Amino acid sequence: MLFLDFFAGTTTIHIPLSHRRAMIALLIRNQIPVLRTVKEKDCSLSLTLHDKAAKHFLTLVEKRGLPPPPCLAHRGFPCLLALFAKRPGIPIGAVLFISILILSSLFCWRVDVICLDNDSLRDPSLRINPDQIRTELAEMGIGPGLYLPTLNVRQVENRYLIQNEDLSWMAINREGTVLSVEIRPSGKVKEDRTGKLLPGEDNIRVGTNLVADGDGIIVRDEIRSGVSLVLPEQMVTKGELLATGIFESKDGDVICGRVSGKIFAKTVRRLTAEIPFILKEERYTGESTSSISLSCFGKTFCIPPSPIVTFLEIFKKNRANAGFSDAEYDIIVEDTPICLPNGVPLPIAVSKTVFLGKEQMQRQITRDEALLLAKESIDAQLRAMTDATVLSTECTESWEQERLVYTVDVFCIDNIAKETEYYVSSPK
Image (cartoon, rainbow, N blue to C red; front, side):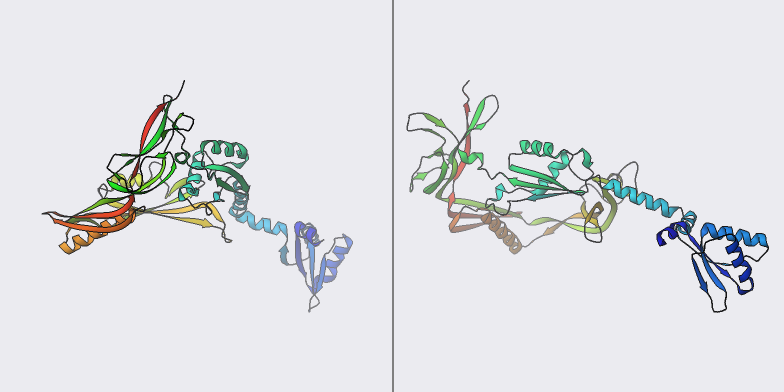
């Protein structure tokens, strides 16, 4: 009953003591239902009636010539409608909000890529970059803003797996407005380790040999495919063939393939660092300009909106007047996702782009600073020699008029094998 009373609406009126008998007689004579009756301390009455019954009762009171009783309160759904009638924006906004909420559930808000076996792979080259997968899926149309009812999951999975041989399995699961993409790397051995020829153009296949990229004395070989042509303690020179993918099998057949592996030798690596005495440096001028854009379902909108050109285009056209010239500014982009109170990210992000002005400067450095920079450069080159075991080093300093040439001869055991290709015609 309370539920029905709410939707029908109720009105509470006050009947004074002086007219109580006459007004109650009107209620009884016309059989007007009263929902609640409250007797006040001064013996007056507060009656609660349905809105329709209250209007009928007030009409009868007016015809009888009695003073109209004051209305104490209006409650229920009709009262709310009357309030919204004065503020049409509230119901319109509620309808729009519900409509957007319903429609947004039909579009993809976010794409999550999960690689199941990345952590278990020891070889970093076999690991899959989730950002790359997300970018490639976006190029196929699988990204924020995708109309989900048109998504054919199995077709997308098969099409992507055919194009990408690094994956052995893919599953796209829909979780509300989020697409969760689970992938598994193939973990297959790279082709250059199988020893098989790679297909080329015009019916030509490609194989590889290993040649020396420097002089040295062979220490050991780590050949995984192909045949080594050198022995330990053997001296080789730069360009000499160390291992080949062309060899004769036990059956007398000539096999063409690819060599995979390393050959270590005692050798000398020369590292050089050239440090000019006048260094070019950049510093920020303190001038800056910024823009704010809104990204929604993969689309970007400038704030304030620009119907003709983007802020970046405006900046490029006017940066000369603003004191900026080509290559004299840095661009810093900060993306801030918008999330619900429970932490769920929405497909909306605010992006702030800041352009910082900078200028080129020249600085004269001392001999000590130049020597320090040269040693830092040599140290970086040494760290890049991941296969080398350093035995000893010899350093040479050459002070020229405008620069320092710092040379280091590194005596080490290093991989001197360099891959070179050869071509084999496929039989017709």
